[in-house]
Image 1 (spheres, helix red, strand yellow):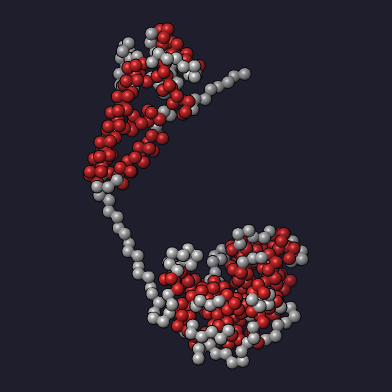
Image 2 (cartoon, one colour):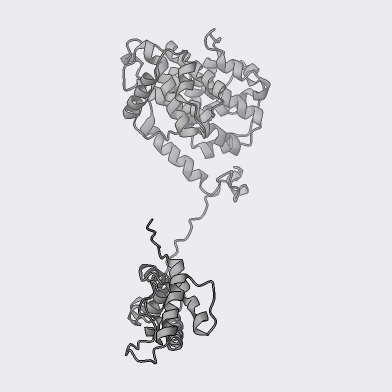
Length: 436
């Protein structure tokens, strides 16, 4: 059987171990091919021209006259002199570069360039070092020059007016609060609201009604609880559903398929481990098959577009609750009101998410008897309380309506102790959005 020996970079560089033989100390660790070459030197009095990968090191000093002076000791001395000369040249280049530029950046660039040349040259790392160190000074001179660095000054942080607590200033440096850019982030969300605002579409649907949409949202809340999904996933799923229904007519038998597919897409956006396709088929009671769900997913993404970074009202209500320093029961009550509003068709069409979230939190604080939040809410939300009056009254009317038999999932969810039983909070008789 024929066997071939592959000479690698590491094995080739091992030729320098022949110095042990040149010093008269023969080592048994030297490979057979190298021992054979040394034997030829000792027998014939001259070095064999067949060397492993590196070539004839005795010519490293630039002498190749074929005389007996090109022995192994001469080759070793020539290599040492050449490397020493190259090292001195490299040091001088570095000193000149530092003197000329006043900075170490050019030297650093030179080292990187020499490293790249070294890797692209011969398979011998030692030969590559000699070639680079013997390079001319022209490249250093061409790179010489003072580098100017322009630093953009950071804009001064906007401080809230007098009477408004500086929540972001108090939490600077906290990575969980995102205080350095939180104002710009939510302003970006508000700028994108108009792009995804849903117009009144129910008049274009021939088989779907507002009541059927409310039942679908109630079912999506139940799915969110069953799969233990994030609340952002629920709000994203409802948003995708509304956008799709505003652009396509849907039969009533396909409405649940639309909702399930919207939830599947939302899970892929917000969930770390989204549920499987088979899980959604199961919660649909196998009313649809796998091909129908995947086909609907492709169709919905094509219709609604692949930009799913919606401005969710849920994110706003958490932000407003944080800057107003409300307690968790108050924030949970606002979340309950906001989640109930998902079932209200008119609160999800032609409505600003930030304005809806601010109205829900104001209503929650009114229900809990909290006062003194006007200045803070108006500053961080960007709305006067009087601008929230219409949505505020719509939310009050929503809470006053008795829950239908098939729309009790959200009330049951927020009646649990985990959610501080906020669904049982009584609604005061007279409520006004303006603070007394």
